[in-house]
Length: 437
Image 1 (spheres, one colour):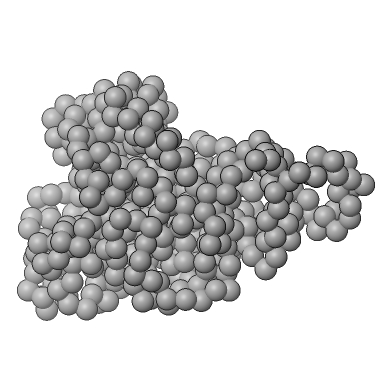
Image 2 (cartoon, rainbow, N blue to C red; image 1 turned 45 degrees about the vertical axis):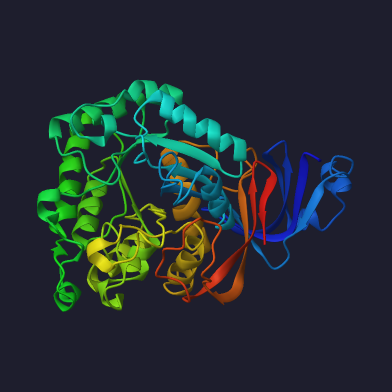
């Protein structure tokens, strides 16, 4: 197969510009961006590329938008240990179908990804499929038991992209501080799941009107806000780069906004369900609406959405959390937390933020690609010469209802039947087409 790929007639949006241009990809990199004034002429005359592109594969992207490949900082591929829900192969298929070319996978597997051996297992098995770049995130503590730090330096050497105790917070503040100090020394971001369990109690839904209607124990915003505040202080003292996972409260938004105003190295992400839904959208005791953090009040949803629009929240991340139908049955009291998100995130973000709120396409490219790449220090996330040729080509005019069938092994989502715009047509990773619709 030729190592050349030419994407013609598309419109390009990255975090800085929007323009019509052709893209020449060579050896997995963006070799040349040919603007329309150049591309309208013979390549050989304008740039001496006539012979070079003679054997190129060609994608005609007329009427389509070419975006930097999406980067998900937060997904669960469940491998090893829970492969009835998802595995490293089906997770990659779901990611590619959603336009994602790089995915960070969380460590709450079985066994926990708390060692160099576990990190190497994920990298090795994911590489055999090779649809998307899979970056393992190492656990903060051994077994995620909160009592002893994992071997963070060895995990970093093995290829861990970041640290997280995702699914819970590190309760011991001395341990968390020590982990942050290591993150600062090793230049690893800390992806912090913020949840004070003593405030959660037996809560299974947001504390509010819907909890009362369904006679369910509620989770207050303070459970999230308290740990956000704590971790900001600890990160400030350690010099670490702190990233707040799945931000869902207006109080949390205010804390992150204040930290940024003070010049602190704090970033944040929001999941599509937290800026498109609120607890009033819950139709009844349906486990597909159960997640952690829970769907909050309308004012929280609006605060999260506005924080994405004004740059307080840096990234859209899916928190892709597949579960079997059985595990999501039984209502809020019994259902597992979480929903799938890789195959719906782009359409939800484009529909809600761009079409609904007027975010620019450059802004969308920033929160889904450029900002996550910058946080991970990857040569990705932009449509620029010399960058990795990880690209997503989408039809923005395509309106449709989210179907009930997915590339993921699981189908636990409240979004089936929701009307959206934006359909991924091609996903390209390292110059190779890994998904075509």
